[in-house]
Image (tube, rainbow, N blue to C red; front, side, top):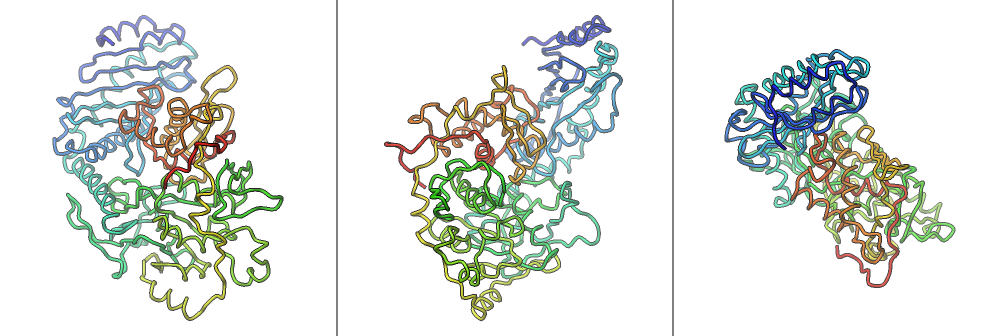
Length: 590
């Protein structure tokens, strides 16, 4: 599209001043301002509607970012997230503009504590920057405020760009620190498997957060820096910080134990978020986890569609076949069993669980209960009797936070005790306790885990059940917060999917579902791919085409998700149906 001049933009705004709000539609297109190219991709139809979508593009000759922050993807994403946060924070100083509705509002969907590829600010290898944001075009009532729009587009926005997106707006040390730290985090995570680890927590890390709704680090003299027990201390190499020492959690079955309020769940929460990188100063910059670690929890009331939960729950009263289990209102135990099988289906290699958010009867059945309710009356195979099989037969590690289930000491490889927020080696003591205080319970594994998992062919979601339409609109998708998506006529509740960290990720997930439906599913039961193949297709498209394959093409409010969260969203879509098992549809190899 041909770029028009700043003078032409000024002429239009002066001409439409005082006219009806829809006159702003003339602004759509590209404009060359002194420092930047301004692209107005979508003009809101009403001052009370979602603000207009704008982009600015700055060449490398203008940004003048140092070459050393541009050399790798990791360095560029660390830098771009710094620029996006600076832009967002600076908009808070502008105050509200004049006019009705959302007049004068400027908003960027910048990342929070995590460093995740996103569409807010994109940095190219040549140092050019494209920033995407929303602007509420000014109005009085529903009439154009032309002079106020002139000030906003030709003064406020360029000034905002100059104060946040250029190298001169930041100290060279700060820019380099963001680039290098992000690169180091990638290298640490990539090195976990080679070191036989599923997670790493650097010494000196600050894990506590300000609150359950504020992900920023807790500050003050009472915050205890993390220190690894000597028995678990490892040193990993990074390209910028050099050797980094901390606690390495080995593959296998790991228990995090301790008294209440001593930091067990805080540590697990850090590991849960360790699948993402973090900004400098977050405290978790060098806390990394297996990129395919998935948090599992009970989720009363969620839908489950044709999931083979038979390895954990046998035939239910009334003859319900759990090899093909569906419900619109899962219990705690059936939801947790389904979550594990779904995680395996999406490719998880580490499971994270907290006793506090798990179904007790799914996690353990002690000896007394085994005597009171014999095994032939209990369909649940408790997780304690499957957790070693998961690692031995499938290579799936588990990290479990426990405060009351001592029976897990019999199956643990590693035990970490949290004592006043400090980690202690407790493996030897745990094995001694298990040896000297036997529980008397017997394992309840009627069939091998792998036999149960192979009892049903891989699921093949049908395109017709993933319907984004509502009323006369073929596509109606809305995202409410980071935990709820309205997809067509149905709401997807993601409140228990704890590794979704932002509204922008949820927004991208909603568009990811649409991409999966339109490009990688089929209405033909015999032709539709497996769920795993659908996930492969979406993630490959994102890797090859970028996040702009989602949404309108130039959206600034998308953040990259993992395949596991996309699977979780699809699995919680209530009308989801899968192709029935049939001839020629073989179990997908694991």
